[in-house]
Image 1 (spheres, protein in one colour):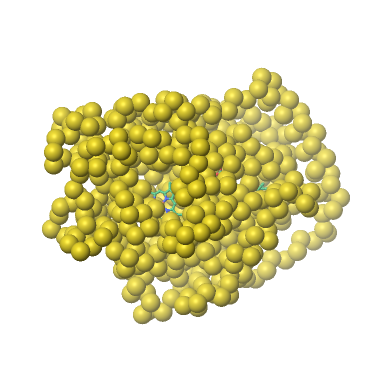
Image 2 (cartoon, rainbow, N blue to C red; image 1 turned 30 degrees about the vertical axis):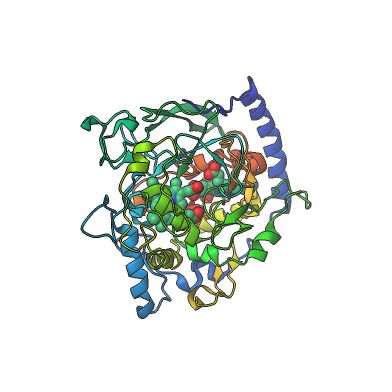
Length: 500
Ligand code: HEC
Ligand code: HEC
């Protein structure tokens, strides 16, 4: 099964686009040169503390799972107990401890930290044999459900769950629904990605290389996929500062939106409108690559159920479809008198942990090259979407996160990023070419925390330059200017990103 929405570039497109690139780029550079201020505006001193008073210097053990610097020792206790839920590996039911069982029956990983290693982002598999773990595949067919935002694939549901509690097909339990009574189901299939290389040149003659991914699924355990199935790959993002993003007031986000591009800058920016399962109403979305989750509680609840198979108050049923009988027959992890596999208290505790994840301090923020890159970031137009600075609102019960000046470099809005990045999937109001601007804080620390560099919604970009080169659609103008920068300027822009 391959993705039917695979975009095919038109013949001659790249040659044509190279010409347009050169002409437009030269024009834009001329304009920049004419308006370049004689000296660059000095950076705001607050910029070196991107998370305001939550900012904590990165320790020797590089991790994004440290508590906000302004969290009292008393409140750190709650933070750390949430942290243990984030790291804990769930067990198959029944087990001796009903607090920790309920894994699956279908799942992708046993713990949150399997995908968000040390709170950092995931990566695509390194070899064709390696299972896709921290890169998940969403499945859908045309249509929409107002509460799910998509129409899930009828047999497999909304996400390919690569594992089942039967754990191995070698146990003679394949295909999927032959599992004998008492055994769990087998995983749904094996996600694969293959890359084709695309080459090109910057205006100054330096070469670049991008890898174009193509996704498919083999070893489908429950029969064929629906003929119109759309695959949407999603990489586990880094989680730092999630509570501060949640604390940006709703009015600020809606005010930045410019759906009809009234100011004519070529950049629209739309709010996703998604279903809030606790309030039972439509609200702005904030989290996930398409901003389809409204808040951290619901995001955590969705992760428990979809990624680990732990049911909860917001997602009360196991992710077994009607067609997956062995999944529906499997034992669940609800204790006596408990309606779900994780209680509201423990779900809240996990959310508390996410909310107070610290932002690390910047590196080398005053370096000459970094300051030049900072200037270019604004000149080139990156800041139109990656909005540098926000002030958080007043959050009852969370003084640590309230009224903080923060530097996340996002507008939390959806932007058309062009065909190259499109997944063709509608998710609530988000369209097939739209993605939420990801925050850029902590970007330079990422590779030190995780040991790899994987950017964009599916980790296809192996460097920051590759990530920028993939920008199209509303970001095409900025990408064109980038292509026309000199090597030194490109290095300065990247140095700035790495300092965040
Ligand atoms: C199988 C891998 C996997 C596991 C396990 C997992 N996640 Fe995620 N996480 C993801 C992916 C993929 C996304 C992006 C989802 C999307 O864009 O739709 C994500 C997104 C998130 C986000 C939103 C971040 C943002 O800035 O938008 C949070 C918060 C989060 N996960 C928390 C958790 C918690 C808490 C757990 C454990 C209960 C967990 N995750 C388990 C893969 C995983
Ligand atoms: C029109 C809005 C827009 C503009 C302008 C823009 N970006 Fe982005 N940027 C995005 C979106 C949306 C994504 C996510 C795309 C995806 O994952 O497919 C992104 C992704 C990124 C990423 C990858 C982040 C990650 O965590 O994977 C980097 C780095 C980045 N942008 C830097 C820049 C720089 C530098 C510029 C200026 C040259 C720029 N962007 C201009 C919207 C924009």
